[in-house]
Amino acid sequence: MDYIKQKLIEVALPKAEMVHKLVKEHGNTVLQEITMQQVLTGMKGIVGLLTCTSKLDPQEGIRFRGYSIPELKQKLPKIKEDGEPLPEGIFYLMLTGELPTNKDVKHISEQWATRAQVIPSHVFDVIEALPKDAHPMIQFNTAILAMSTESQFRKAYLIGMDKKDYWDPTYEGVMDLISRLPIIAAYIYRRVFHKGDHIPQDPSLDWAGNLAHMMGHSSEEVKRLMRLYMLIHSDHEGGNVSAHATHLVGSALSNPYYSFSAGMNGLAGPLHGMANQDVMHWLNKMKREIGSEDPTEAQIKAYAEETIANGRVIPGYGHAVLRKTDPRFQVQLDFANKYIPDAPYIKLVNKVYNVVPDVLLNTGKVKNPWPNVDAVSGSLLTSFGIAEYPIYTVLFGVSRSLGVLTSLIWDRLYGLPIERPKSEPLQWFIDRVPKQ
Ligand SMILES: CC(=O)SCCNC(=O)CCNC(=O)[C@H](O)C(C)(C)COP(=O)(O)OP(=O)(O)OC[C@H]1O[C@@H](n2cnc3c(N)ncnc32)[C@H](O)[C@@H]1OP(=O)(O)O
Ligand SMILES: O=C([O-])CC(=O)C(=O)O
View 1 (cartoon, rainbow, N blue to C red):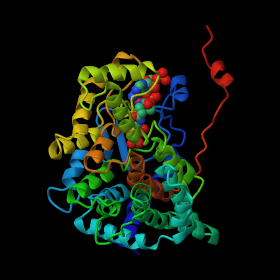
View 2 (tube, rainbow, N blue to C red; view 1 turned 120 degrees about the horizontal axis):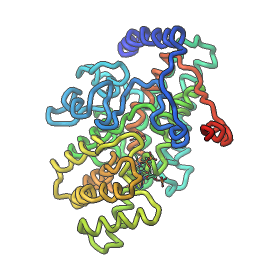
View 3 (cartoon, rainbow, N blue to C red; view 1 turned 45 degrees about the vertical axis):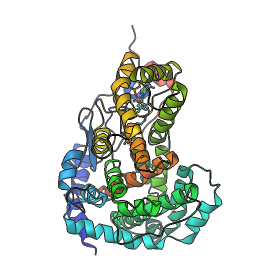
C-alpha cells in the first residue's frame, strides 16, 4: 500500500472513533442557538458541518490545518528557496494534518504525473462536441462528469464493499481526478483561445508548473504565479458554496467526479468563483465608460457609486464570513507589487482598493467592505500574459479540487452519513414570532 494511504489510516482511525463516540455519548449536547435571521439569510454562522482541512476566521482569514498563508509560504516545500510553495504540499497537509517533507511532495507530484497519463479519449470527444464558445466552465464540468466513467468508487461500491473501506476507492478516485484536472483545463484553454494547438504534458514538472506549461505560459515567472494561485485558492473551510456542494452531493455516496462537479457548478456562480472573471469586466467597463486607461480615484469612486445605485454588486468586494481584507487578496497584491509594480492593472487594483471600501461602507448595509481573493487574481494573471478572462474560474476550480476532494476523503474516513437538514414553509417561521 502507498505510504501516504498507510499514514492516512493511522491518522484517521482514532479521529473516526472520536466522531463516533461524540455522536453516541454526547449526541444531545446543545451547540448553538439559531436565530430566524440566520436561517433566512443563508445560514451564516450556523455550525452545520465538520471540516478539518481549513478554518476561516472573520478577522484573520484562512488557516490550513492551523497554518496561515504567510506561515505556509515559509514552511511548505518549494522548488527554489525564493519560489512559491508547491500545491502538492498543501494537499498533503490538508490530507494528513502534518507538514510534508520534500520527499512527500515529490512522491505526490510523481503519483499525479503518472495518473494523469490515462485520461480516456471519450473525455476529449465530449469536450470537442461542445461549441467552442461554450463557457470554459461548461466545458470543464462536462469533462469532469465524462471522466466519472473511470470512477473507482462506483466500481468498488457495485462489487459490494464494506462501508468502513469506502474511503479507499474514494482516495484513489480523488488522486486520479486531481492529477487530470490541469490537463483538462489546459486542453480547454488551448481549444478556446489558441486554435486547438495543444501542448503535451511534461511529466517531469510539478502539478502547477505543468499546468502553466500546457497552457503555453512556460516562463519561470508564470509557473511561480501558478503555484501561488493553486495554493491560495485550494480551500476556504467547509461552508462555502463549492465545498458545501461537493460535500452534500458526496454524502449521497456519489462518486468523487459527481461530487466535485456539483461543487464546480457552484463555483461558476457570479457571487462565488465567477467573480474573478466579473472583476475584469467591471474594471474594463469602468475604463471604457470613463474614457481613460488610467482613471483617477475620484472617477473610480463615482463609477462604484453608480454600480451600487444601479442595484448591482461590485465584484471582488464583500464576503459572507470575512470582515477584513482577505489575506489571499493581500498575498497576491504583495506578489504583484514585488514583481510587476508598474503593471497598469495592478495600479488600477491599488486605486480601486483605496476608494471602494468607503463606497460600500456608505451603503450602510454591506457587512464587509473589503476586497476578497477575486479582486486581484484576474489582474495578476492578465499582467503575466494569461489575459483570457473566461479561463479564470476554471483555474480556481483546479485549485479548489485540492481542498474539497480532501474533505470528501475525510467524510468517508469519518463515516459521515447522508446530509439532510430540515426545511419548513413560511408559516412555520411566522408562527415562531413572539406574540405581543
Ligand atoms: C471566492 C469567493 O467566493 S469570494 C466572494 C466573491 N463574490 C463577489 O466578489 C461578488 C460581490 N460580493 C457579494 O455579492 C457579496 O459580498 C457576497 C456574495 C460575497 C456575500 O454576500 P452576503 O453574505 O449576503 O453579504 P452581506 O451580508 O454583506 O450583504 C448585505 C447587502 O450588501 C450587499 N453587498 C454585499 N457585497 C456587496 C458588493 N460587493 N457590492 C454591492 N453590494 C454588496 C448585498 O448584496 C446585500 O444587499 P441586499 O441587502 O440589498 O440584498
Ligand atoms: O468562503 C466563502 O464563502 C467564499 C470564498 O471566499 C471561497 O470559497 O474561497
